[in-house]
Image (cartoon, rainbow, N blue to C red; front, side, top):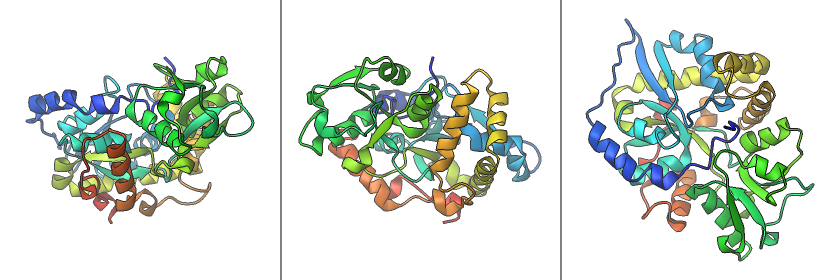
Length: 342
């Protein structure tokens, strides 16, 4: 299975609907064993995808370099059994913290799942339509085109926004759904464009030696909100504020180390997960991911991960408009910056 594409293709509504409701009923009594040894707190950190990818590098570095241990934490980096399980694990206290997407948080919270965002992973929305042509494709030229995409509500929502900005709808294009990666569809000439993000599909295309251009959804009405997020179980956060703060501090430390030592950081990933993806792809993916946090050499601080009410409101508004959630929810229920000292 291709490992390049991890994001914006999850069946968001399904993942946060009936399955979570069932899991909550079955697992509500779950609790955290916080004794990892004298003076140490255990943290179960669930990932966004069942196969490792280069997005995980900051916390792999923080664990490898002993930053979590120095902070009094024993962090278990957990992989979910399937693409729908991250919010289930977090919501039912089978995990304490998670790496996920902003839209997963919105849809899960709309179902009453006790999860909140605790920090952004990047600063902008880097999702768009990719082509192998020299110029970014104009949404006004999409009518009748074949678009490689994924069977998730958010990808369709962003594509719908782009089309709507030029007076068209999703019915004006033909969607070709990929199970694992849209990249082969584009490389093999089976579609005219694909949906994806720069540090997943974009990095995969680069690793294959394929030049691409991207038309960003944020330039055509989509909210400029980070795709990826760090999240926590709200009940766990309330009872473990110091551990949450220590985790974020150590993770930012790992992020900065990885940005300053990219080759060593990639090597740590490859040693931990040698069969997950190629060295070339991981190197390019980390380069693209690192760039989401600013210029090389610039130190990332808690300010760079801080969330805003305006950003979350833009996500809620779009989620309602495009049917990801039934009705609006208060943005104050979606996030907290307390673990960042804000």
